Image (tube, rainbow, N blue to C red; front, side):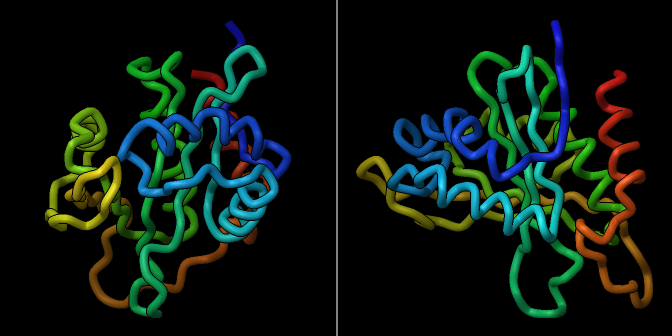
Length: 194
């Protein structure tokens, strides 16, 4: 079976949306109500990928999962923090693909100088909570009735993982696009050789 982990491109938007859409329409896992257009989603990919890693997993040439990081909060003191997200199609859930996507993304984020990773998870999504715990995330809190979806209030939990803890003053992180292309390619290639 041919598998590939690579950087997402804006032209992947429709294929990534195919993975993401059921989480919007059928669950409270995503707090979006409406499925965005492919054009809108392509802009999201472009915007995020300018700052942080946005990865896709392909099996037999078909995108079956993706993961990305984005800015946690906008104030300057939060610049070392990101929120991380992973979505997988039903065909590949439970096969270790999410862990591979996260591991590659974490290596890239470390190279950027990111310190803290945060995951915001709907409290009823016990599979995601378990996944994050298995991948080194610790529970840090619950926001009660944080969103209203599927005709009920939803709590969210926050989990965190430190990937570059410092003492003293850290240097400012660099944009993802400022990393050396060969360095990024080496990280991605390493995961394709596993």
